[in-house]
Image (tube, rainbow, N blue to C red; front, top):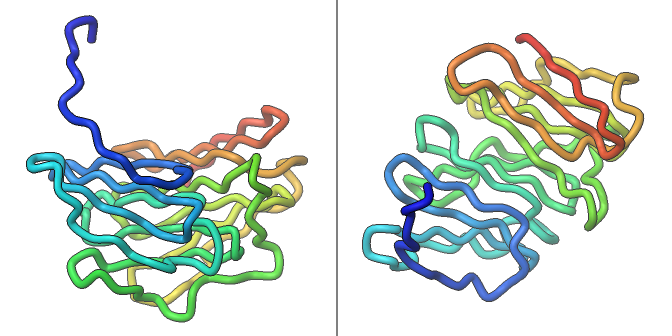
Length: 179
């Protein structure tokens, strides 16, 4: 990486909570202004913007490995699935659960997606970890893990070609899970 050069510069004109880059060279960002914005990195043009993606800030958005969908979390305490081929929400209504609350503005919910694009893992303010099945176009809670994390879950990551995923909380509690 010592010889890497900046390929391009884009501006999102909002506070950004995360970015994700697809294999097809599309970049997305989740914003404080309730939107998800997409750019084509080949021609530096905005492809699409999902306005009002959530009722408040979009804290995280990620492409599924098959790149057909984007999963997003928001400060409205919901998780949503977007079909990027049609630029519309699917899996309606959005996922909501009495144990799922998005951490405050200093601890943004992150999410992870399984390599087969079927499962999403998200963590909550109270330390609860949810594994959600999204493949059938509806929300199904596959698993709920309570009482392990003692602080808000601030990070989730799925093994790129495997069945392990990890979660970490604000105080550094790290757990590795096998699906």
